[in-house]
Length: 266
Image 1 (cartoon, rainbow, N blue to C red):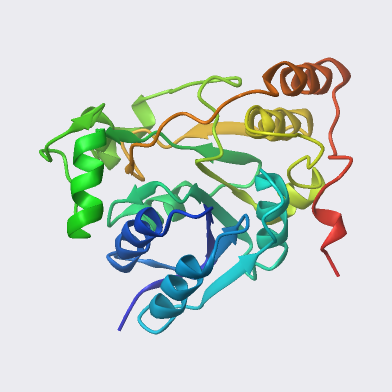
Image 2: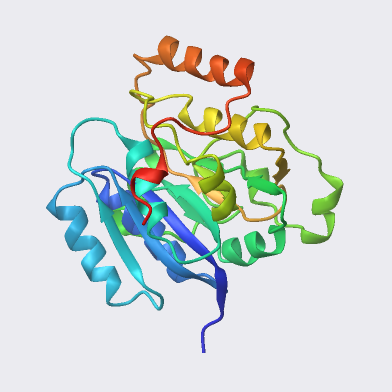
């Protein structure tokens, strides 16, 4: 009999990285407590990804839903908004498709759920060679002593000491590659701002709007441990424009995305 956190929907972003996504899905299969559902926010991947998800639908003990948009460039905000519009849980854990999660990940996030706050998490980093080896062997069982691991202290899970660690504040290290929030709060700020073009700052801008509606940030230090698979950094060719949009949100106190999740809500 599996254990399920009935409030939590796990949303995983992906784009044409089936080898990474398979490692992530395998790590989800090892959860001690499962989410209510797993939704893949797909920014236009090809047939390989669809076939992979179809395979895992047969073995995932909870619903696995493929939310797909056509490949028309980097539109991760749109793909996330569309996926989150489909969730049935009241609480969302959002990770990128290069984040392998440890077995207590969902259970820990359930323990961190609290009205009036959102949660950000850290991740250890797997080296290029170690990532390539894991993709070859399809071995997702990464632990504290695994080879090729950077920032391995992030994998220390010590629940009784969690409350002693304050963690980052403000926008520092606030990334949507590992974040959790109430669906109602996400809808209140109208989700991710789809007017961002290219990679960069769209996640910080969401976090700023969470602050602007009065939410507090909680860090998942010593809990909800995760590992980031290596990949080259994405080009930030729109960085200046996106940074300006973030700064405008900070200065104006903007609370709702102009182009957001309300497009997809019934």
